[in-house]
Amino acid sequence: MNLLVLIIVTLAIIVFFILILYKTFIDRIVREKDLQNRAEIQHQKELALENTKAQEEERKRIAIAVHDDIGNRLNILSLWLNNLDIEDDSASEVISNQISELIDNTRSISHSLYPVNLEKLGLILYIEELITNLSARINISMHLSRYIKKDMFVEVQIYRIIQEFTTNVIKHSGAEKIEIAIKEFDNFTAIVISDNGKGFDYEKVKKGMGIKNIESRIKSMDAEFKWKSVPNKGSRLIFKINKNNE
Image (cartoon, rainbow, N blue to C red; front, side, top):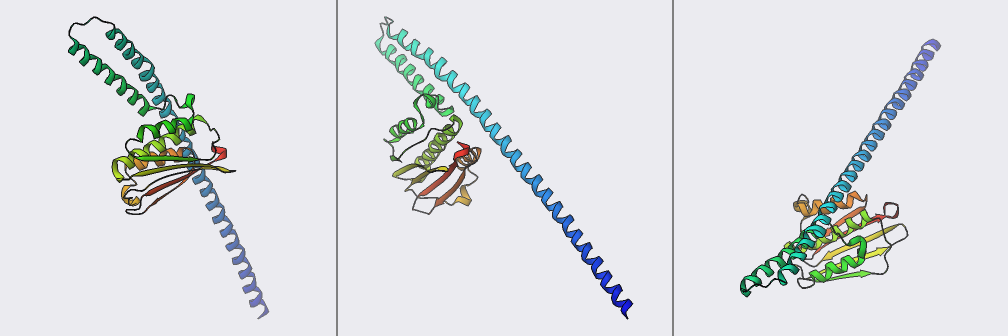
């Protein structure tokens, strides 16, 4: 009887240790898999960031070429035309108007590709310029207590997000008002953009280019974000940029 008990106890101890070893083995596999997944996610983030930066650099190169080269050539052509002695005033006026329109379109294309003067003017002045340009179409305002300058890549993304949001609102929401708020905290910068339009169902529009562009730019800064939208009560985008990512 004692021998049987001893055998049972011994087997129980062996089974217990086997279970412990098995659990340890499984836990190690899970940890290694988790580390691999995290490394892969981080790698994908780094690739996405590099891709976004490369795209921005190419946009910048083309925008500067359009703004500086083609724009300047059109300005010279306009001055040259004004100094010509053309007998047909109506033809001169048509040509002059066409050149002026080309100059405006060139600036618009350059601006849509890359905010060429952002580095020179600074983000806040550039947003204020955008507000001025849009104010004839919608009531738009910015609330700002203070602002700490950030890396140029981050500032370009912030500007592009605001630009994309306001464009989408004007095109689709039927809003009368847009508000932009920028607030600095100890560990992060919070930016809130909201409108009083018809709102949207996020699940239905999340695959649209406007939303995807905005979210792609937010993710390129490794920032947190949240959409809030209620039908007929407007929409709101909140995103937070950590100080170590600025």
